[in-house]
Image 1: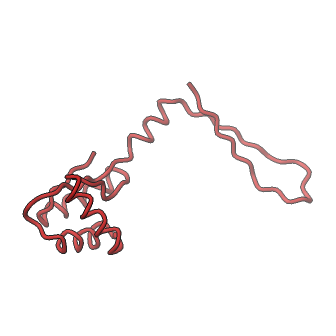
Image 2: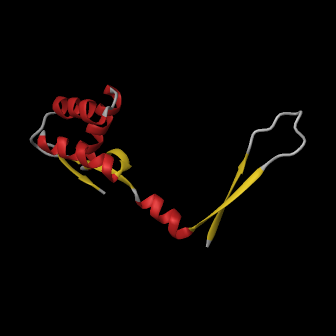
Image 3: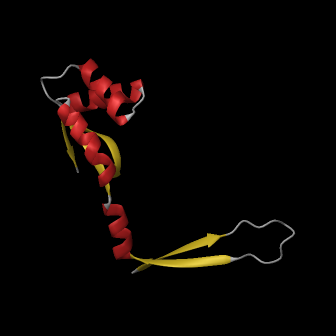
Length: 108
């Protein structure tokens, strides 16, 4: 299966012809791109305080205070919460830092 992606260049009213580029990607290429995206999952624990978890999310994941508080509450009440998504190479150092600070996290 192939996915067709059309790229249309912006044209002004004065231009008569539009240039259209067509690219195709196989479903394997799309699956590979999607599989590169991962999430850091924060798990609830009975050790760390809300304030400490919030501060860590602000420092390590660069959350704003409201987002950090919401993630902390979701992890507390649901047992876990995705707190950051991205490429595996970008998430590994963040996960290590959060683990070093005593939080329970994993990459999924």
